[in-house]
Length: 117
Length: 112
Image (cartoon, rainbow over all chains, first blue to last red; front, side, top):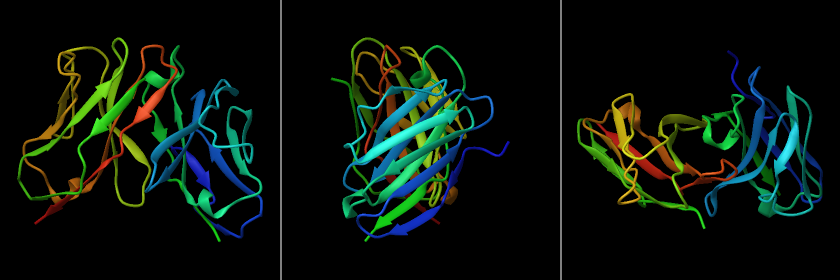
């Protein structure tokens, strides 16, 4: 299995620019999660999807952040405009189909390290 | 509300030493409990989990027992190796399966 694939692995951009992070979940998984990891706040769940539908986006920090899942094999997390405080590692994870996505094992991608100058 | 508290790091041990990383939780009902491990430069991997009281999760020599009476899920290993050096995260999923919480992580370094 290829595992969860994230791109790019590293992104450096300037404040005010749009940033798009991409994720391909493991084939057959129907839940997808976006996390942000920083030294100050640790690991935070931003949003998760079940069957391509956003279930809970209460962790999305503000309107500058948006996430989409147009099909079962692809998701994006967009930040527009980006700010230096958005610098973090962003992880995507996916899990098997069951009735309660957050009780299942989550399989994490390698992460995207974002630096906003 | 729900939350997870784990011991502050960093933890440094000599090879073959005994490891305990404490984790306590606050939750309504009986959450599912997890330990994830993050090796340098990688994403998190599930290490073990337990879904009901008194269950013991185990993997790669690591163990954790779901203790309802003490609301704890401490991670233990009898003899650590250099390859166990990583950051360990305790996590819980609430009763409804609609919320997921990670602890702040505990960094472990094992020296030869």
